[in-house]
Image 1 (cartoon, rainbow over the protein chains, first blue to last red):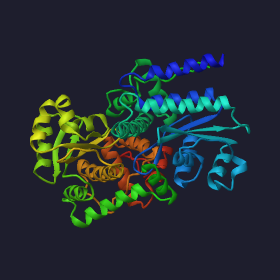
Image 2 (image 1 turned 90 degrees about the horizontal axis):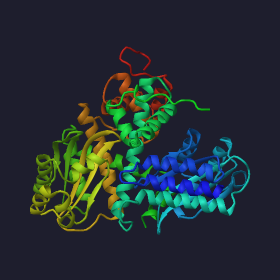
Image 3 (image 1 turned 120 degrees about the vertical axis):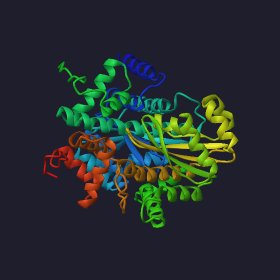
Length: 243
Length: 249
């Protein structure tokens, strides 16, 4: 049954890789499916901003984004080492490696995570980002789960570069900048919508995404429409609670 | 090689790229202390520090090119004028799509993609063109065009340098577009999600566009001598408001 779900997810991700797909929405879906398939509790994805930094572009929840930001600010942690070396740094027992990454491990443990895993987004010899997974329970991932996680990281790389020839340094630069740009537009739209509708930014994101799904528009296009005022907060109906 | 360099930068624990942006702004400011010549100084410095022949800078709006801000030579001016007149070209595409448009061999690619623009650009002696959008998310302020009289891509190092110049130019043009004087020291843009979210909140509260909202936020942070990210968090928490009838701020 798990194999079937795995196949479904890869088909879902492949389906989103159509002409004019939305990079951030795609990476967001990918982090969410990672948590589901790889037996972890949180995921975040960082990309090289080509200005000497990594930036958090997708994440499953706010505490994870903050933890990743913290790691970037302190310039210390397995995700950064994974990015710098291009090596998988998986099954990191956080309590056992305090001396190696003292600041990061303390923050991650405080968030309630026991294990972390970092997988490179790699295009041949170049590393363009890292996929980071966090587990609450103190147990390692199986070989199978790790293989799926690396598969997801590879799919993310393909998604970033899919539409044209991979040989091209130029295309890589253009795509990375597009992803970062889209992320900013979405953050701005979250702010606008939250102020107009009197809701939190998390709820604002859910409404933006639900609207994009329902109408088949790109998430970034919906965000642009909110920002420019062509899409009113009345158009973005609250999400029904199906639970 | 690029990655090794990035890793080294990070190893120093510093904010290297932002520091470079601040450096670029400081140098340009030293050349044009009254502020009006800042775009020209930036463009000139960009030519000096990269292997390009010339640099042009244009204001952009959602409707297209809105004015030429700087051009370091005749060909750069020609490039800007062509795109301004025709409404097509790499800079128009860069601004519209929010992504750099890098054309290392213009003669090979441009005639198909921008037929009207290609002829004039090649005639002006332009062989490679690199257009960088100057924008912060949905805030479009302009475009930075780097051209070269021979074919060939920018190196990885040059790409980083060009992006730093683009970041510096964005900060300058943001103030120009919002009608604010360019103040010094210009706080370097904080790229955290909170700042972009707060920009959206402030635009609604103050009833202004995103560009002006971002300038308001930065000005307030500067005046209150506090980090931009810190102020943004307060805006999101509701403890600071930019509503006109509100004195919370």
